[in-house]
Amino acid sequence: MRAVVQRVSSASVTVGNEIISSISRGLMVLVGIGKDDTTADVDILTKKILTLRLFDNGSGGMWKKSVQDIEGDVLCVSQFTLLANTSKGNKPDFHRAMSSEPSREMYSFFLERLSKLYNPERIKDGRFGAMMEVRLTNEGPVTITLDSRKFEYIDEPANNTTAQKEGTSKE
Picture 1 (cartoon, one colour):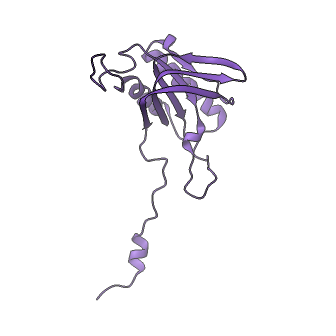
Picture 2 (tube, one colour; picture 1 turned 90 degrees about the vertical axis):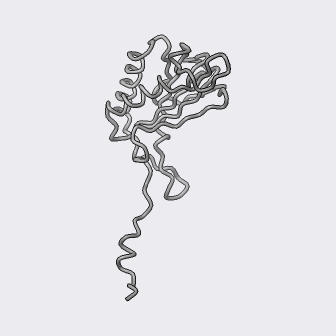
Picture 3 (cartoon, helix red, strand yellow; picture 1 turned 120 degrees about the horizontal axis):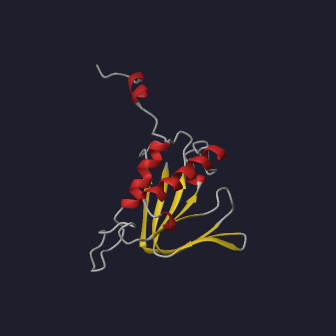
């Protein structure tokens, strides 16, 4: 599971011509769910998102307070494109993203978990599967990428061990 977390002074989600969610100071969170993600991945990311110290303490001390500490808002948007693989050309491949219905359920669980760990009135969301306009004012700018299983969604470079074994030896 992958998340892009941005510290914002405001953010909103519009579907059609209707603003469906908006927040003031807090975090804008884009969430990508991989096809093999589990509730353990949700637990890892929700705890990290809520405890990341991305805010100042009001007296100039940077990186001192979490969104919970400042009683900020959290606006989440499901975004399968965070799982894109672009290593084989220019067309993104989304095979690592979870399919629609299981992803909808996992994303709902993610929102429930955030609400349980924090203040449910402070957790907002876009509209799953909809074409959305996301607007935000990034404060800083501060943008952090989180992954519940670091590097697992990135293809590793080809292993050259076989080529080395088949090469000529120096005797």
